[in-house]
Amino acid sequence: MRIKTKLTLGLGLLFTLIVFLGGIGAVYIHFLKLDTRNILHDNYNSLLYAKSMLRALDRPGDSRLAQFEEQLRNQEGNATEVGEKEMNATLRGYFESYKKNGQQAADLLPIREWLIEVMEMNMQAIEFKSELANKTAVQATIWIAIAGLACFAIALGLLINLPSNIADPIQKLTASIKQIASSNYKERVFLDKHDEFGELAQSFNTMAQKLEEYNSSHLAKLMRQKKRIEALINSMSDVVIGLDENMQVIFVNEEACKVLGLPEEEMVGKSSKDIAIYNDLMRMLLKEITLTQGEKEPFKIIHNNKENYFDQQFLHIEITPTGEANKELVGHVIILKNITEFKELDAAKTRFIATVSHEFKTPISAMKMSLQLLQNDRIGTLNEEQHILLDSIQDDVGRLLKITSELLNLTQIESGKITMNVKPCDAQQIVQYAVEANHIQAEQKNIRLVVKWPETMQEVKVDLEKTTWVLTNLLANAINYSHESSVVEVAVTQNEHQTSIKVKDEGIGIPPEYLNRVFDRYFRVPGTHREGTGLGLSISKEFIEAQQGTISVESEYGVGSVFALTVQTVSTSKG
View 1: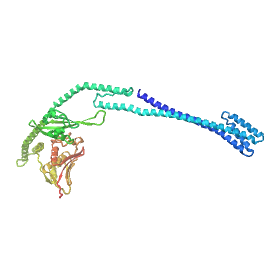
View 2: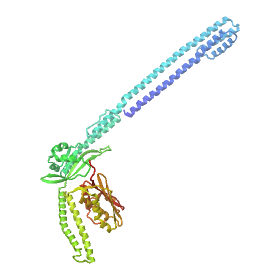
View 3: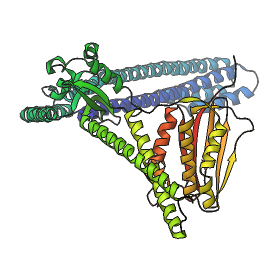
View 4: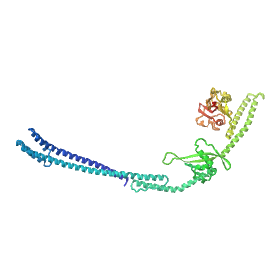
């Protein structure tokens, strides 16, 4: 029987019995009401009338006959029992004889006897009708009890059987669905039912069977795909190590085995933390994988009796499970890219630039000295055109000398051979030197240099030469990119721990999309036509950060820029 039919029959029968119970109660209450009303109306009133007539006979005076006559008429109108009408007629005859015979005392005796007979008749009728009312009440109790017990039995049966009949199959289906979700496609549901749950179980078993067939038919294909992926990973020249969410090694390629110095069978299926106990490289990788912030520097490994440089890349694999909204971490992939060749090329480039710059610097310096000699009047007098040519050559020589100096500084930074002579220096001296070095350039564009510093200045802990070079470069850029007849401001602020030097110009500014690249090597803002190598700001950043300082820029395109460098203040406090 179907669940819908069971529910309809059970609840329908329960509803019918409740209606039946209410109907029985209403009918029997009506019958009891009628019996009670009959007793009161038919017999109790007759007793009252008879009693009133007896009292009227015992009263003195002529009014008693009128009272008796009135009650007798009431009794004659209330003759409801069998024979009561004849008794009322006999009583009427006796009463009339009593009045005709002059109200003899002897005539009162039959009247009294018949009144007693009337009262006994009505009392017997009351007793009989009371018994009928009791029978009616008993019958009502029996029927109401039967209907109530039937309702209770049906409700109890529904309470005991209905929840289990619905919940048990649902629990079995839920457990089986979880098994299927766990890839246990052999799971089946057996319900000995011919209802909706039976049909659902049959459909579930059909689905599970098809999934099992599908899984079996695609197993070979999946294994082939797995081997293809493994071959692809092994063919990679980079080191590839796969970890699950519990940091257990799930795959490694041949290059990883070579670099780690361990065979595959000693790593796959083992905890990476256990491997890190006796393998330094694995220990370092596990330490680095937790550092999610900051740029990771390439590291050096001695492999095949040769220095090898590797770039680190850590991929955290997250997936969104089917039917869920939140992602969950399922593993990590460590990739070490061999950049030894690029490092060697970079070192060769650095050596080449250093050699060429060094070789250029000597002849360029000699050319500059020769130009200064040519400009000396003791050598000979030059005409105006020759002076113009010499000035042009001197500008070019100065520019070449600046470029070679920047390239030499760059090669020192890249090779790590740069040395910093950090010591307490006069900040005012640094600012004055930078302003004086750019004074002529500012006058040529009619730019006013404004310097602001506190009344008392403490010393700063910097490399005097390199910090002066940085501030001179910032001030030269500010003048170079400012409009004519504008103002370039140098402002110095100090506190107990830091000294900030800001160079503010009223130039063309820097577009917002290029602000985060102005300190990159060889970068120049597109659209600018000023000469330069794009190395000045990059070298400035390296110099300042090597002194534990910072350099930053703020700019509003079309309004101007503010470059700020912050260095350490030499504290004068004692204690």
